[in-house]
Image 1 (cartoon, each protein chain N blue to C red):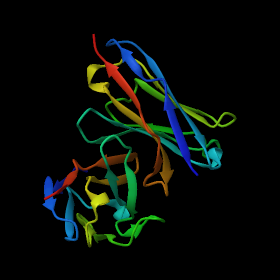
Image 2 (tube, rainbow over the protein chains, first blue to last red):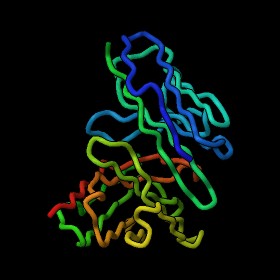
Image 3 (tube, chains in turn purple, brown):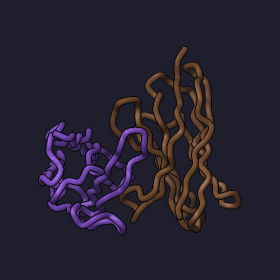
Image 4 (tube, one colour):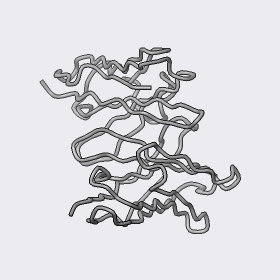
Length: 109
Length: 120
């Protein structure tokens, strides 16, 4: 499965809503779709798993939705700490495989 | 607090070998499947491989680009997971992260990474 993310870069101001898209070339098994945040010089951080389940400790301004081939990460009100690169990732189970999208950079406008 | 610390990175020539280590703390290591994920400089993320727990047979799985060249192993007595990399190529140049499995479908906790550079 190939994942495509759009847009490549999103330029927004703090307080605005961010909508990030992740599209799969075929249906994602059991909606095993995760989202990560990565800041420069840091390891990725898991935000969302199973398309819409927020990881413990992740602020509720982050939400995931979608199913099948189309998924969305929404950040309801951007805070300064949210400007980063966001990756989606899908899991295949037999054989095991994990693919990441190319990422969406959220920049300060 | 979960902590993963990688070590063993460095500069090697094409065709050479290198072994990365990752020591874990803050959780019951023997109960967790472990992964390696890499990121080439300025590029995106790429899953490298995974090892299950000993109780699940310590079975490994690898991404196609590294299958047959890389081997993942674990030592639960030391809370360590290893990535043995043989026949290294320039395209293996990357930051290598160890990461815990999360519900068998994604990666919950990550180390800070070990940089591997393959260049003549």
